[in-house]
Length: 94
Image (cartoon, rainbow, N blue to C red; front, top):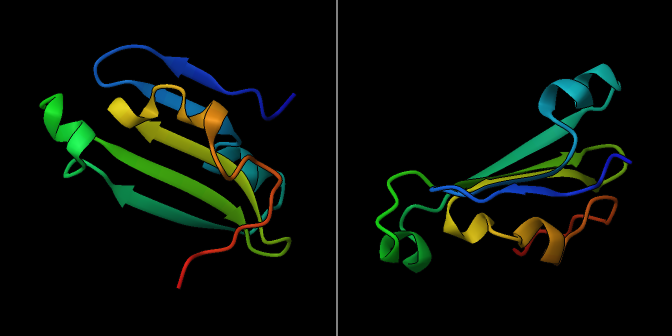
């Protein structure tokens, strides 16, 4: 099962679901890596976090999300409640 989410409840929290960048490369996927520094989010500031980010890997050919990795307060459970679970089409807001 490649899309079983996991979360480490520490400070800051860490959650992950799907492939790592290395696993995606080994699988021959051409992935777009989208990152977001979230330390300025209210949830990060309210917990005085100095490190908070999110990374999403999107299979360029299939236009599908293959992974999501997050660090910070917002990571607690987000990979299990995500509006863009792995295997779904990626539709960025423009």
